[in-house]
Image (cartoon, rainbow, N blue to C red; front, side, top):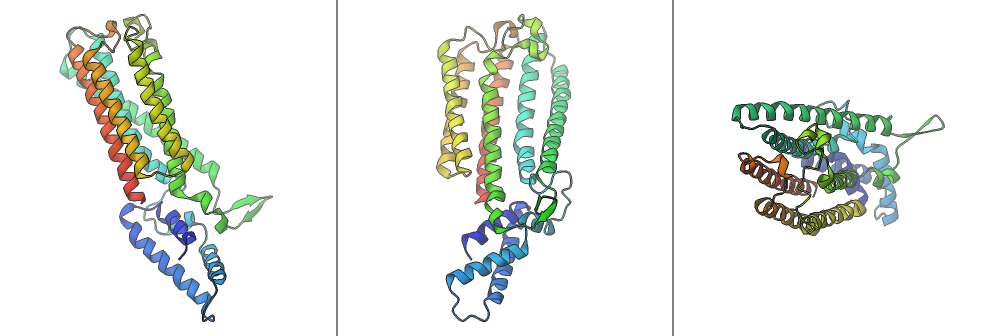
Length: 321
């Protein structure tokens, strides 16, 4: 079969559970092969153009790969449809753990800064309560956004033109390529996250209702030094370049992923050195008794995020090969 069949099969299995993709892909390829042979049965030596035409007819007879994938799905996907389901799973595996780590870190730093004496029980209660709330809000936000996106994207297998349902065509295959769409969506989310990271040095404490601690100044020590700020933003620029490459190519290669991993690790080392050698948090947010705890929690959070990011990225790349 040609690359056209490969793209079609990828569009079908990309929406299915990973452990069933191999068998289903083989089944679909065999079906396509049998149907093509049936169409060419009366020809002893069909020309390449005839074979290509027969293959195209077969794919259009099988129809929209999104709809075909539903026939192999054991569980309903009504709220989050098949067009957005791969992105929804990715968000659950990557965004939810990231939000959990950020929530725990931010709440721990704030709690320690606002308490003269840190009690472990009170700290754990604060972290659990606020983190659960953050996770529920994140889950609801992602679900609602993707559900609305699905309602706007699709009303069925084909397009509606002047009130008439237009049947699916092989020409739409490239536009519905699951891998490319998911990579582009992940790259856009990555760029948004990088922009938010770039704004961290400017975020005032008043935004989180703790502005009374340092008169609404930023969480980051303004006296840290321009070199540290420039280095921080420099790493973010490199990270953004990697995401732009993914967005433009709509694909990832081992070289791009390796480059991103090296940049992430270097960024983590840079931040770790800064936290261990400099007063990174605003002095008025750090108490003498809690400084070491704040520092440890922040460093651990940085490395947890980096390690989880790499595991998620390489796992996604391996399963999409």
